[in-house]
Amino acid sequence: MTIKASTVKELRDKTGAGMLDCKKALQETGGDIAKAIDYLREKGISKAQKRAGRVAAEGLANVVKSDDKAVMYELNSETDFVAKNKEFQTLMKTIGQALLSANATNIDEALEIKIEDKSLSDYITESAARIGEKIALRRIKVIEKSASQVFGTYVHMGGKIAVTTLLEGGDEETARDIAMHVAAINPQYLKEDDISQDVIDHEKEVLRKEALNEGKPEHIVDKMVKGRLNKYLKEICLVHQPFVKDQDISVGDYAKKNEAEIVAFTRFEVGEGIEKEENDFASEVQSQISS
Image (tube, rainbow, N blue to C red):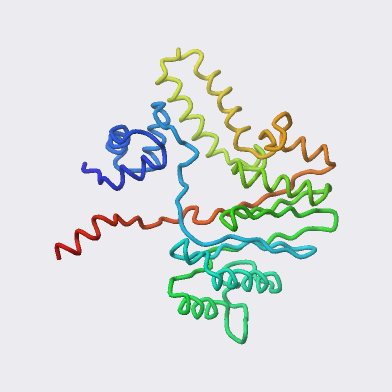
């Protein structure tokens, strides 16, 4: 089958593998990016597994909180330039306060919130018209806490990443430190119990093929897979990760040291999961000259 150069480039950007390896992987998997990523991992070729699935987009993420509620939200724009625009940042603050004051728990409800006698949806549309670029409220997450629980919030790089942690016990400093860790390391789960069996089975299969392709004897492969799987699970679970501010202890132990237990965390990174159109400027100019 014919594999588009753009698809090869996308796979290369996600894995760090060479162009020829990416093309072969796509040919072997019928052009399926996800399967091609697994193929490269199994062959020991993928150099940037953790980048898989991360797609850039523009805008800002933020978190606002009151005594018993935190609201996380992401507002997207077409360009980073507009995201730095003063009016866009004012719009971010207005939306945050509106979400915190209302009872909306999802996007549909949020867009019906009233601001200055108009819906939030219309308010955003009017702002977009003035700014001159498409703007959209992409997602929100409402987190509530009890009297014995503590919020930790952290916004990184002016709004490229926003994190909220929820602790049972402890204090805001501890919760914020853990939020900073989450921003930096991007754990996928809180603990092993949160990982579905499908995810574990898939990882086992990939690790098994990886070991066999390394030439390891069949009779020791299962033992190797078990060890590698345990290592992998600890790497992606927050409570087991080495704490960024003290590598000698885990994040879970840091929480316990401060008389706290991590209940949950939420991390928004601007643009994750959104396909962003990449324009080849030279090709665009050439096409205009030729037309």
